[in-house]
Length: 135
Image (tube, rainbow, N blue to C red; front, top):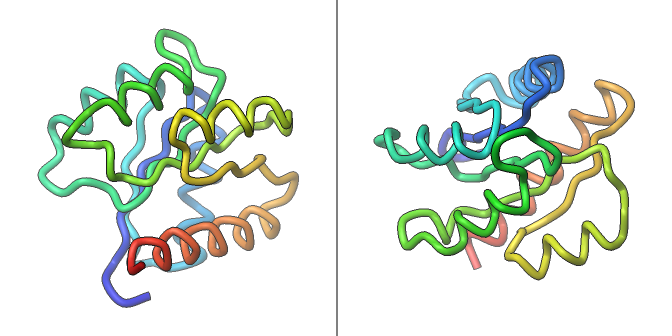
């Protein structure tokens, strides 16, 4: 990976966030990772950041502002609409995948069962998003 990527994980489950950050460090220690516990927190944090993330990983089921509503707000924002958003959820529902794609999600990643699978899936997803960004 050429420039150091900055990712943003939005998830209300602290254990899932910690596992995600650990996997990111396993993939590439040079990658940075912002964190937020729900959609409201994510939007507020994004407004404060000097450097926007390269990819946002967004859980669907969260309190206060869920993933769908957060995705809608991101894609409606001039400032954030070009940041790829990957839905990162335990749901593997085809309807969730269709709905979020229609709302502007770049990809959909069902949370893997093992740390190794998570590392493989994240590395692939990050690479795909980087390739799309160069198109």
